Image 1 (cartoon, helix red, strand yellow):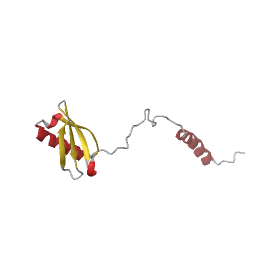
Image 2 (spheres, helix red, strand yellow):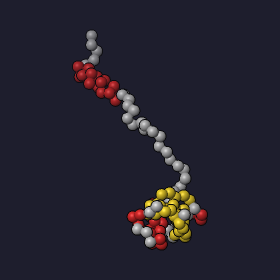
Image 3 (cartoon, one colour):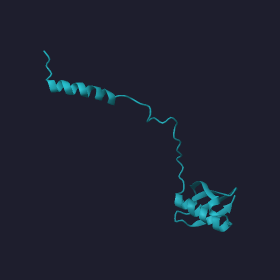
Image 4 (spheres, helix red, strand yellow):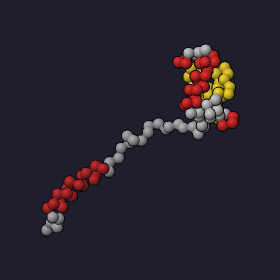
Length: 106
């Protein structure tokens, strides 16, 4: 009375558990904490590093003591880059062309 052919029954028996295994759910791919993103544009890394290099030269500070800590859009399509320099602060204004237009200690 079995209407399944022997090879069809064999594949059904193997395929059914495999299909069920593929249906299991897991929360491992779900992030445990939300990712925070800001919509504010930041200066490209190359421009931030140009500011840090210029600050090392102008303020006679070792380049390994200068760190760009934040940046934001500035006037005329450029950026303002905040720098930490061996415990001091500075702000660099730089154009998209990589020319530093202003560098001042804060």
